[in-house]
Length: 320
Length: 273
Image 1 (cartoon, rainbow over the protein chains, first blue to last red):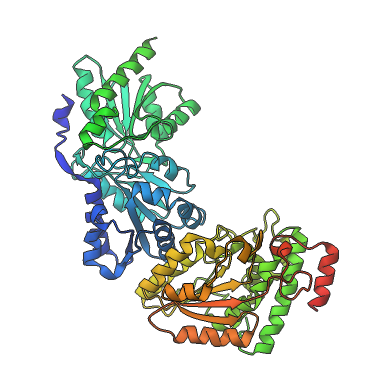
Image 2 (image 1 turned 90 degrees about the vertical axis):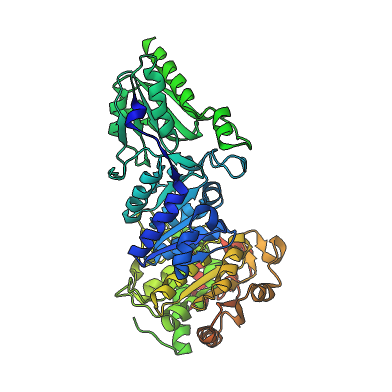
């Protein structure tokens, strides 16, 4: 059983790993600065603010200004992080991300927490289901969606050292731990967690753990499924996608609108290289609602069972 | 470059800059003469007298930073930077042509000595304040100078930035509003009145100086007052005339974003001789 290889023990939220790693980075370099828009207790940047108050810039509830302040700091040589809920920093700050970071290629580090629909009770105004699409539409940006706290910490370090602008997607909910502490990560290099011969499940964020659980559900029915963690959504790992296509059936799962997330990017690569049957699991053309995170993920079909069902559809189509 | 504090010398430079503005926009057959001509003394006074910078070392860490929030007025910036020696003077008339470093709006990819790519209004003040934050953290004497249009300050982000600048006591940032009272569609008072302008900036916590934006001596005094003002940022509300120096462009909304014809250019250059 795959679940024995991946214990999937309960871990912390990726937003918490972001906040903790930010403190470590702050200790390592006095050039690390952080801008916040009155959500530091939710994004965990309050940990940085407490230790480095002079390097923490409170911007008030003004995300547009915050993004451009961060771009000004980064233009002047600082390693500048701007952070808020993903829905706010991407949507309210998008114009500034475009003109003050992407267009002049300023290496701003943008971290959006509370992404997806798993924030639960606060409802759709706070949920971010289009952030991957927006971030990927910015030329020069690298876009990351870590699956757990281990990958968040590693990707934070890679993103900090990266010379260009980045967007990192973080979640509110606690995640299951996918990776051991020694796992190596590389920008633009997907991680093939499980190999399978009937179908490959590609995912990012919390859907990686759901895809791993789906492997067991499928194994119980005699289906061999592989899993790929596409932690870097841009630049995308084309080779990993082409390898996945060799089995002839792919499922892409994400806590994002299916119309404009990782799935369409995978499909683009396949259409250019090795056409393959693909099924998509994600938020359909709608906004979610309030509820517990578990209830929301159940209702909107972001569970291992949904991934397994999609895998069976893909395999059935493959067999014609 | 030869810096000078002599108002007569600066006025001569300003006259040259105005001729270059008119010529380059005429050659391009498009561009924004009115707001370039209104900001001429402001930029000349900054680049040739007030700011610490070195065209031979454009990325000197302690340099003062200049940001043209109203990026469409880039002809004045291009002309002044070329006069300083940052970029070729003899290429100004390639403005807006394919392959020219003199892009339609300032673009750091083409002129690395620019501090920011602007053109989408409302973002320059935030950038300048961010740079001022970095300078303070570094213990650097570097200051940030940001020129905004009066129409530009209708953008909400300007007032987010204004709050930020006062809250963080960024006295190393100086904002200059080129208050020429005209925007693309007409007179500012008819499109979206920004008055009472000085009261607004004072209410937002800025040291506010109203100044004749075409008087070099008055600008020099205002910049000196800004440098001496501690604990809060300073804004100069520079009262200017759109199209200043060319009779038929002055106070004429048509010349916000219309290039002169060849005949109009000839007439303008005679007036600016």
